[in-house]
Length: 176
Image (tube, rainbow, N blue to C red; front, side):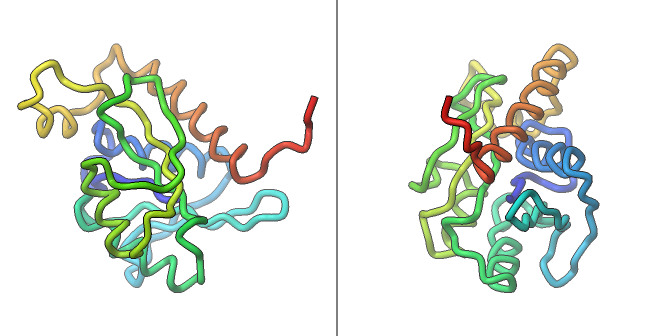
């Protein structure tokens, strides 16, 4: 499970993927450690019948695929078993969705991952951050911290996204 973002700007909209993965690590009691080899922070944990590797690349968003491919190669992980968690301008804050494979949709962090893994098969958890009214303001908007009024919504989203990832990784057998 990879949280995309800019490591040096953890509280920005663009780094909401890292915030989700941080929340998931905390929920699972996983501890982060920096790996120079993988150019990022890793946390290893388990849920029933599954080992989970959490990754936060310590590279700029546009080249984070370099970190991801190192971990995927070292642990022999299929691209289809990688979950990329990233910001999504075309969804309002509080909304999120899972996408199975497909193009980067203009997201440079996803594009870097696709290029480095040479695959479109990654699962993507797209976390809404909304879009500024003026489309020319996108670059500034994604690099801004969440506002005080957005933080309660963000808190709920982090929990809901973490639970969605856990449900995806370990679906319930309950069919009632």
